[in-house]
Length: 297
Image 1 (tube, one colour):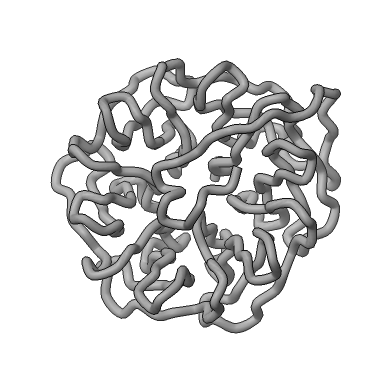
Image 2 (cartoon, helix red, strand yellow):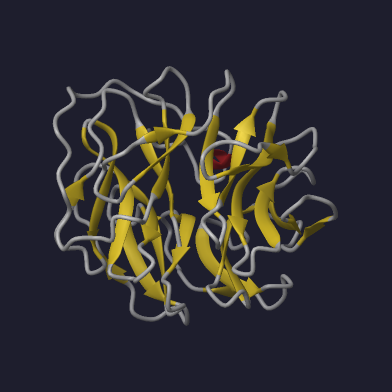
């Protein structure tokens, strides 16, 4: 499903009917079997968080709650996951161990908190919140505690993502009239606009492991497709070309692959491709919807 707008995606995910399951395929070239993807799926009745190998095998359910749990991000050690859960009347940020144990709530607020991203040093969690009346980028400690807004309070800023060295944050914003991709310093200063198009650019941004590029989805060619852009705003390249919606990119730790979500087979499933857009391989086969969250670093 595609949410009606980039900002509403922070609090809405739903599913639709799909096709029959078949045996998963193995992507080529081979990806290390000890890596894992986290994803959100409605395959067991409501949105829960799962993990699997990057070839689609060994899918494990990690959460089990009547509320929706989704949009998980691996800690730098790969031992924990932060996610957004609708468990207490609104979305909050939670952290759990990689096997689903040790759940703890990180934010406590009466409006929506979502899109968590661990800092590269594992000490902080970036998140999007509606607590000030507009969506903004906030940061808190990995154990909770003091919460600080980084982005401007005048417009909607969502989906912050740390650069690999922790010095900068990419995010999507409507501050110039429509949704565009920006990069700011880690303290929230010196925001620079990277994209400039009347369509929506952004949501679930992903830095390449070497810090040189940012992957994102854009509707500039009529529907959601995946693009990459250099961090200075040059080198915009389209990676996918499909009548369906392609979005939610995540880089492999070695930078050679991108996993993503696509509705090209009627319902949302998870795919992987080479970083240049070639060799697309489907990983999940389910009648429900599967949404990619993150790739364990």
